[in-house]
Image (cartoon, rainbow, N blue to C red; front, side, top):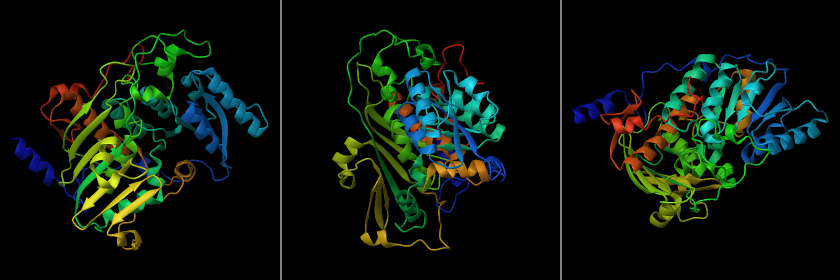
Length: 441
């Protein structure tokens, strides 16, 4: 039965690159109708989460002439006040308002679009409410903490018809686009293997309990996550290494970026691997409990193998990763390879680097500014680089790896049904309980 099922999946529709083609009609939101915002209008913008990542986005979004930052929201009052002060200085006004509860901000009828740059465990709940309130959103990666959040987020975006851009900005990078076009046009021969090297981290000991600072709404910071004592390190960017809030380096802490590129190159934006297995290590004690080092192997319906590693393992094992930027993606075909990372591109034979993709060949969507691409979609209805459908599929690969490693089993995935085949233990891990009163709706 398993062999028959696998053969069926492999034959159930092959695209030009051999990836499984789903019988899906893309919602109009992926190619939104023009005229959402009149060309002469300003986009009234707000930011939810203005810590390290969000404040960086603020400094960028505020420089666009057609954007007016109207509000900021953060449970960290110091960060929120600092962001509002910066904004009001920039505009020589006091119009930028501060909020501690995202629901109050999203209820404002004058806000057109928002940035969501909170800890991962908050992404989906805020995103669903933003969609319900009709707000377009630039949504920091990853899409979700657990897989059923992916499905809920996709449903909300398609139901309310808002523009959604996932912050996997490497699709707006010329090097990554060129590497993917080499693959998609058969310049490496037949694609056989993709290797991804993601970040790793250094474990830390158990942290002492500390008093909650008066400028932090800690209960709101925890939100749907379990109630635990406060410690400063928990509420810094290191939340990405704690499993209650993130899937760690396999996903939001870095890996989703390169997995997204692997999906793009393999023409798998509406599908994904059908098998996965892997091994990894998790610290036995200390604050961090996401997977620390790992090796996962995914198999696509077209036969392409995706080997997913932490960058330390990748650098030790694979010559192409032994470079200053060892967090990258290696594509290997029957006639050559190309390795791409941020600010770095290499290939063999070297002639691959001089290829010019012709007008009649596969030319992937072009953007050299991920934020501008989002703003243009809001203003003119042009397509975004990373719509929710592709975000779901890239997130899925990360969740596959995490679950397979934690279970220590080889798993089969049905990309049509979006669940593991004949493995209830694995399917239970696609969802996590939320602390009341928070829940998916």
